[in-house]
Image (tube, rainbow, N blue to C red; front, side):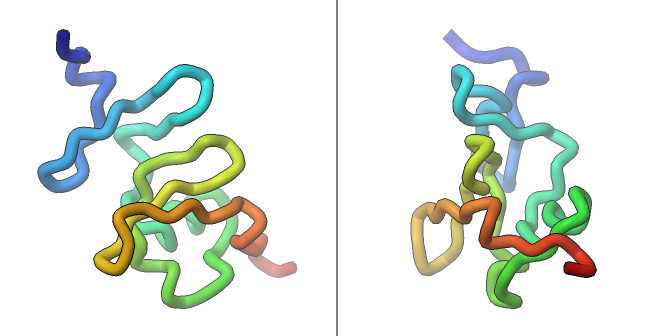
Length: 85
């Protein structure tokens, strides 16, 4: 069984489901880089090196990211700071 294309987000050659139960979600229109995503929601990464991480989506507590050094990493939404604070 395959999911309809509008339920899948493609990041390079990786297909990521847009929703997995009540836990994981993403949107096809979300920016891929963590820094760009953070900026789109009025936040910024806590560390400059986090900006380039590839964001897969969220479980509403963590931003789930991948990098060349690690297959995936959770970043707590508290590890990003609101702009101007």
